[in-house]
Length: 222
Length: 226
Image (cartoon, helix red, strand yellow):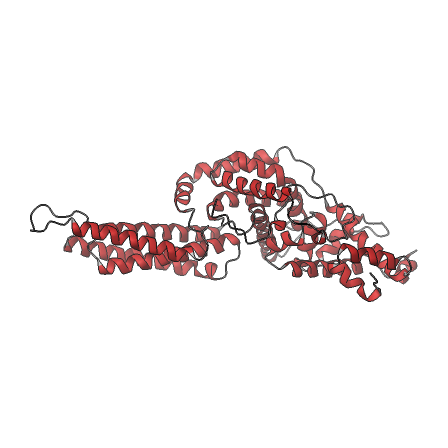
């Protein structure tokens, strides 16, 4: 392989082993390239001056203590995260599948409740179906709760829209998944407003969204 | 572990110990041959470490520290300029890993992800220090700087390099530190700094060109000083 002075910078930037060997051979007869190769290599040697891997015996115990304190401080958070830890690790195709599975599960639950309902109006009635007065109260509380979460979401939006860290990007994606699931559940609840099971599912999703938003805002405060 | 999908090729996986390279001018990315058995080991070790950290096992964090603690601290010290801030940044990184391990998606290796958190933590610390400096309008305490160069004295190579690095752009400095000092490959750096491999190579090239200009004075002026 033949190289000339013109190839030098390209080889410095992205040369193969063979190209480097050819450059070295060329440098043996070209003082300018010899000087450039020497200077280039000397920077790598000098970089070694910035390498100091000396151990500090008290450092790990300090980190370990901080980790243990953090774990003790937030056992509930760790537990909650454990439950939902699968959410952010899903690929982008999964949120739709997850939402679909939730909808299917809710539809089957609703169908089961419907089929088991008292046919002649006797009995105490299905406890999973909300009566109209209770339903109004639930809907009103839900609206208030949802507004509060919307306020949290508005506060966290700037951080989520341009996430500065991978952690925030993960929260962004997690909230996207939760919003998809909430939208599906709300659509189901609209069709079947008396279903208490649906309301519980929705409440759980709202709570998870609230916690995720709180954690985003917590990172902002840090 | 089916969800531990990998966006980076396995050559981007990080070895636990910095490589011994001496003068590292030959790009390691051009070595021929496919993934070695060691790559598979690294992958399984990385996944096992992530899973153990996810389960809250403090021994897993101990292992992470044993494998990468020294390199993390060295990197943080070179970015932040002093050992005390570096230790704070590394400790904060471990806490962030613990807090957010549940949201680790496995799109890069766990260790790449950890270093990315470390680098972001260092950026945050640097920004916070700058803000403090602006408020106080006095950087004498908050920003430790290399000792002033005594007239006529020869600064050590380390100090000269630190001084020159401080004049590079943030990206050039980070890529130089990660590649030349810590021994990461461009594929690994690309994962940490969220850039392409080509951009990493180009940034390193620019960084070294600039360093060379700063560290090797023109021959004429060198003769004048004698």
